[in-house]
Length: 614
Ligand code: GTP
Ligand code: SPV
Ligand code: MN
Image 1 (tube, helix red, strand yellow):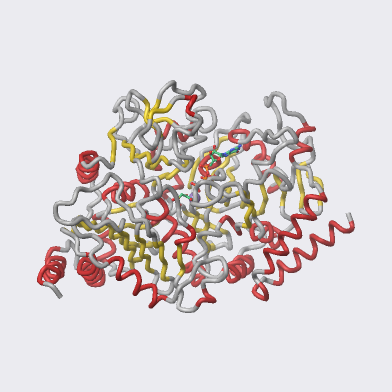
Image 2 (cartoon, protein in one colour):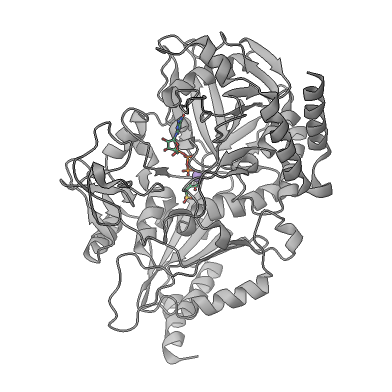
């Protein structure tokens, strides 16, 4: 051991602002391995945030925006090869391969630790190693879910402060309880030699996003981007939390939570699982177009659901901010998101810059600016023939800036979930909305959910893939066990309180290529029907796949140029399309072998049967 690394160990031990022995030991161990220039414990204060963002402006990572239009906000531009989650490079390193299952990349944990230890050896040289204590969900929860992220990226620190509850309060409570925390280690993998100049977005060509489920630990290397680097989000709150949830009998899901209140004052909490870039943030910030209905946001990406004392399902959003898809978020499609963003305190990544120091992306305004600087720093005009913002560009904004945020967001015991929607992006086949025949039929809908791929993950866009419960990239264990877990949860739910399940598709197309349904705020009309069905009302017609609204059942009041005939087309069940769909589902199900729950085997058999006799 060199003298300098010995010194680091001593430094950490004597300078740590906590007596949490496991934490101090881990920080010392990581410092010894990664050899940073210094170790800094993040306190989470505004002053600290201001100092870090000012430094990031100095080093060129952040650009300060026009304070009048985007107060206290910044833009970052990533390396063009570091713009999205990298599923090919994401691993679940359970002790046994079978516990990762066919949907995950797997490697033996010891072998993986060997590889990663080499990569992390000296990885933080010349950089500051930041220690971020954080908690997912309210700090006053019965069992706060702690984590500590170690990172060498100040951009990650600033973003984590928006996305999670971080800092001294968390550290003190964690210490007082001598609590377990998820150790989440992150490095951009770009050590600096003495005198070497930094780049605005350090990262490494080689990326590793690795989870050790039994240890409940995370090691992320080489990327600075969103879900790869803000480890409280996908890595902890979905992959690791899904494993904890399996062991403890709850659910960690890729879902928004929305509260909808009828003109009569009855409130419904709706959870919805849609794959990445398929409309969660938009539905979570819904601006209802129907008279007298009120919507409130509880969460836009992650929902932790536990069984309540009366056998009800209760959901909590463990996050503290929005990390939303920028393109398509605009004053006409999502004014609530735009209002939250306009309050400032946001970090934008890979959007375009306007000439007056603001930001712009496709769909933000109806009018397209005559000149922009695109996300890669090039001049851009409407004639350029390429998007100005990256399709997966993002806004990162504090959740409490949402005017429509529900007070219940802060409740440590969450809200009762009355309905669950599963949805995807499908041009054909899947109706606008279908009510499941039963819980098992709803789990079937979730387990066979499919969607065209988007820019949220590296790889081809627009390819239909099965994405069970919108969790394909996020299930931290064997997908067959995951479906069994969903299947079994039902037994713990009170029969009267069990949420109703629906399959939705805002993205179906008509013969002329347009959307079969106007979407966005108009989705309130579909949700109204959902609440009617919860009440045992609303007109529905039976189809082999479940109940769809009769053409007259959707409230179309005030929706110009859209008729009951259009509804009929949007909810049509085409048996030719379903023949192909069923064949594809059977192919998908074959992956599970004997692990497929009996109830789902019965569901696919029943579906085939209903088509053959209809
Ligand atoms: P992640 O943050 O990646 O998990 O995405 P998300 O599920 O929150 O998706 P988001 O709400 O950000 O929407 C992604 C894209 O879909 C945006 O470009 C939206 O404009 C578009 N979109 C959302 N809702 C609708 C809708 O109802 N209809 C149509 N046509 N497009 C929609
Ligand atoms: C998603 O891809 O589902 C996201 C964005 O919410 S990221 O945080 O990058 O995972
Ligand atoms: Mn997401």
